[in-house]
Length: 459
Image 1 (cartoon, rainbow, N blue to C red):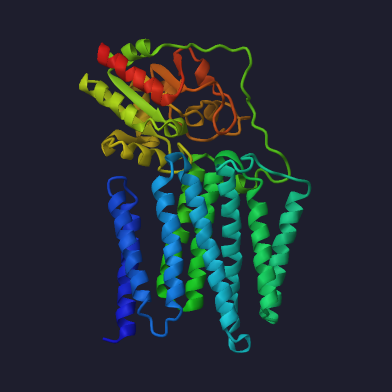
Image 2: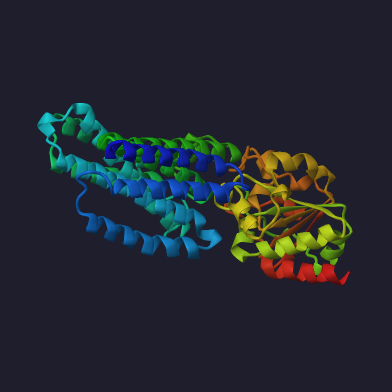
């Protein structure tokens, strides 16, 4: 067996590992194993690449890898669960930027007069999509990290400007195909970076995670284009897997929000979006105490816990599991109702609760949980707001109208754990907070849950 054949066989094993990893990641129970399989496949692919004939600049390659490990490992280990979406955004952006640079390097190495037009087009596709993904992901990171406003940023003639930059990119691609010069490629990259920025600026709030998923798909396509440029089946398959899975995730998120992908991407163009149904002044809510709520929970037959971003902010996942275990020991049926976009991205709550060793069978997706909500004695809403807001069902003028929600309003009693009456990510009021069967426990979720645990233990 030749060296080239052996390397391709190792690449094939890596590709199989990537596919099995995606299969594992489709279930919380198998997600850890899926990650390990994917990482093993990537290690095989990287190792095999070092045996490629004619490989040069090995010292630079190893040095670059060392820098990446020095940055990536601490970032992944130390990132807070609340910051997971922005970490995904910045890692994805780096991937897009790398794909663009690979395409440019390939262009610099070729003899344009002897290169087929379709090969040059592959390179230019990688430059445009990779550059757009890099710049867009950087802005998305800045929005989520609150380095800039998270609200839509709009300006006059925004649609016209976007169309103009898009037309410029198309013109540059055609000009480069006719006259392949390095200057045109660098200008094309600059235009792609500008387009990535101006596409993301008018997207804000809860739409940003959807955008991150779409940009992740774009990065996959850029990597696949690099694979065609370098004649690498590994990059073609890996990029296609990322592109397809990112597109499917984007579609799933938009369905969970009750909106189309074009509406999410373009609804803010040309105007500043303001959410309807702002917080109503002068209305009152019923506040309660941990001791009273503890009695309500301890003597219930069924309690549904609805987690949200506030649970992640307070790092209260271990405490909420402790409360659930106490209630279960008293014979209470307890499970968690997970909205597909609870938190800041799909699976955010699943990962958070899995970290606290909550049994997988206690995590029920929204469609599975909703049929049981009308039999629940208590819906304990911890840090969620928009995902249980009845305005999504009842108020056609609401910006979240049409979004499927966890039907906490159907439970016999609703208990909200919130720091204040501030609205959720969508910036709108929640009628459920003022309902006759709703009580509020104000304060940090972890502190409040700790008090609830103590009160239940004292009963």
